[in-house]
Structures are given as structure tokens and as C-alpha cells.
Image 1 (cartoon, rainbow, N blue to C red):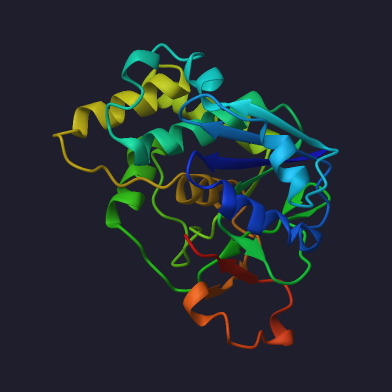
Image 2: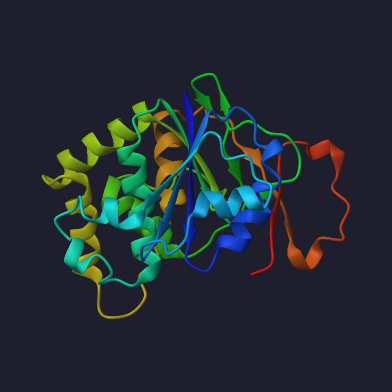
Length: 249
């Protein structure tokens, strides 16, 4: 069973509709769990998607707050700002999903040609070749997992496949390193560093580098990005597996 976790902020519904119209390029997905927040829905999201022509037969909608309230930090969940809270929600959603194969997807990015992020039990992640983002992304890999960055490529591609087995192994490592449950450990790492300014952290880099640490022979595939400003570019058919578009905000 392969489940996609799709995250939609309150102001990103139109982006999600645009993205989901290209779902035919995303192969091997059995079900989709949508997480919406930060506040409760004031409309029926599935009805809105159906009206836009989206096939929602295997979709369910869940509230961010349902995940937030499972933590001991629900009253201080947004202490480090919306950026970090967004990453927390994604990690909590992975933890709540018990299926063997999980794909995390942002709602403002979609593939332009067919691709599967899994080959049986093996993940097939996309990367930005020879690219480095904020140095904090990589320092938090070391602080949380006790491992260095595993590659010169970047996993911040708005898609992240992960197996339940890899996730459970990561939680076990965090608990042993910090002597705390995984969420408390990550929260406390940020709390020690927080000085009132933005903390830069990427769940994609954490998960990608962890899975590469578990399997150094893991093959990654290049993502060629077509932003809305370059949408007139013609995709190169030799890179069938890596097109993605970040649509208009």
C-alpha cells in the first residue's frame, strides 16, 4: 500500500487544484491523505476538488490540529514560527501513517511526465544535483540524527518518498541519541537554539539524508524544475522522470 500525504495551507487550495489536475503523472499511489490547516475548514474541501474535476475517490481530508493535539507541545506548537510548524505537521503525518510506502508532496508542485517514487520496497527520490541550500538544514541533520550530510545533492524537491521501515529506524535512533521520544527531541533541539529569529530546517533533507545513510547505494534521480516563469520552456524527453512545475501563487 502506497499513501500520499498532501499538505494544503488555507491560502493554497487553488494551487492544490492546479497540482491535482496533473495527478496522472504520479504513478503507483493507492490513496491520498490531505492535511489542511492551520484553522478548521469552513467548507467541504472534497466537494471543492470534485467541482474542479479532481477524482477524489481515494482521498480523505484531515485537520492539522488533529496531529498537533497528539503532542505535548500543542499549546506552543507555533513557537518557532509557521515554517517550523509546517515541518512538524509533515513529520507527525508520516508518523500517523502506518502504510509501508509513503510519499510526502507539497501542494504547489507537480510532475510533468510519468514517474513512480517507489520500485517495490525501494524509494526512488528526486534531487537537485550539486546544490546546497541553507547550511542550517545540514547542521540540524547532525544535531537530530548524529550523522553528517550524506550527499552534495539536495533533497528539497517538494516530494519525499519514505518507507515505514526507514521511519521507524529513524525514530529509534533519535530516541537513543536524545533519550526522549522523537517529537520531544526535535522540539527541544530547536528550543535550545531559538533566539526569536527564523530557524531554517528542512524535513526533506532530514528524511533524504537519513535514508541515504541507511542505504549508501541508494540511487537518486535528477529533478529538472520548471518554475511558472519558465513554463514556456520545452521539456527534454531524455529526462522523463524529473519534471516538476511550481505553479502561480
